[in-house]
Amino acid sequence: MNNQKSQSLKLAKMAMLVAISIVLVMVIHFPIFPMVAFLEYDPADIPILIGTFAFGPAAGLMITVVASVLQGLTISAHSGLYGILMHIIATGTFVIVAGLIYKKNKTKKGAVLAIAIGAIAMVAVMAPANYFITPYFMGVPREAVVALFPFILGFNAIKAGVNGVITFFLYKRVSGFMHR
Image 1 (cartoon, rainbow, N blue to C red):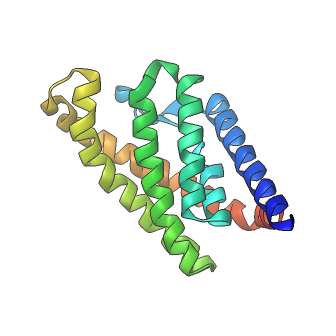
Image 2: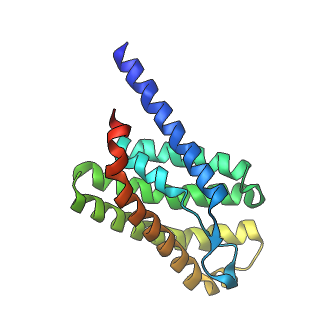
């Protein structure tokens, strides 16, 4: 019975992180590069990363998928399946890589390493993801996507970096609640 209660509490906290993620993207979102205004920064990954550090990479991926689908069906409905898929790929990569590293080394240094390598992995994965997926959903030639690579890679690096740094400073402050 106690294990069931613990699992229910963990699930409720994960749901709360999904809700916070959705509220954050609803309230805070703006383009980083005006010439490609569709690439908008949002802090939605912060609660997802917090959940990843608290509960592990599998939980982080689950939070990512649920938040991405709910966000894609409500706030970001204009981006449709494309937006949901790209969010799952980008944030999913970040949380799996960062979560696996942090799981092995739960120190400040481990958190910095996890965030840095997770961010690099996200940027690296989004290049081929955009190369193969964007032309299909957007109906544009691959050359047009390749021409935007400096913005796409910069956007993903900035978004992952900012969200990672904020997560680093917030996580220890909220981890007590997450583990209670």
